[in-house]
Image 1 (cartoon, rainbow, N blue to C red):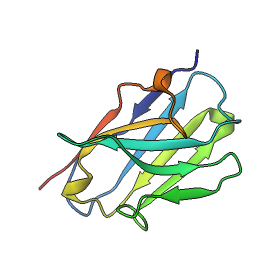
Image 2 (tube, rainbow, N blue to C red; image 1 turned 135 degrees about the vertical axis):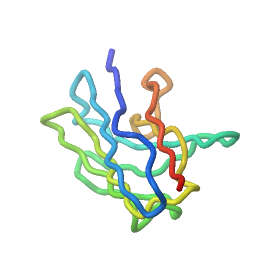
Image 3 (cartoon, helix red, strand yellow; image 1 turned 90 degrees about the vertical axis):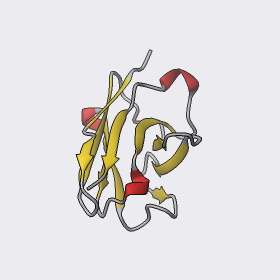
Length: 114
């Protein structure tokens, strides 16, 4: 069974940057992948997706600030975040797109605060 492990979160000031990584235990080259986030008291939402061919899509709230990428040889998906805002504070998860229940990991906490 594939396991996805997110890392790279932390505390950052508004306007700062972070790069999140999602390492898979097995190849996911046949899957579209996505980054999701869940803020306190809110439902989990889709932030960005990337297809096997590299086509990307973003939620309007992060368009122009976040970049999703993948390295199939390293079984890793990345989320480069810049221009971070307090409203980006959330636990960030990766999963296939659409998401599969059995792939949810622990996520990585991103906190944007001065």
